[in-house]
Length: 86
Image 1 (tube, rainbow, N blue to C red):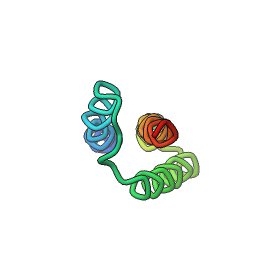
Image 2 (cartoon, helix red, strand yellow):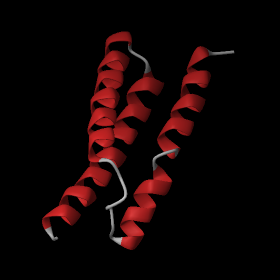
Image 3 (spheres, one colour):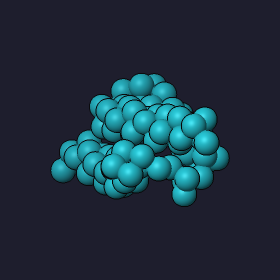
């Protein structure tokens, strides 16, 4: 079994775990219930994982952390945009 398959499975599961929150925020246009601090910490973690993926040349780590980074940035954008409108 190729170890990258395990990485792809973990990446799919990790990345997909952010979809429900992003979809709910997008649908309701309300991000009041989420922790900005938690998402900034996750943003840092995902960036570090992506850098690590580049350093070890792991396609699965690079791809899924970039996808997760995009989702987290969208969530933070909606959170900050919502806060400014109040």
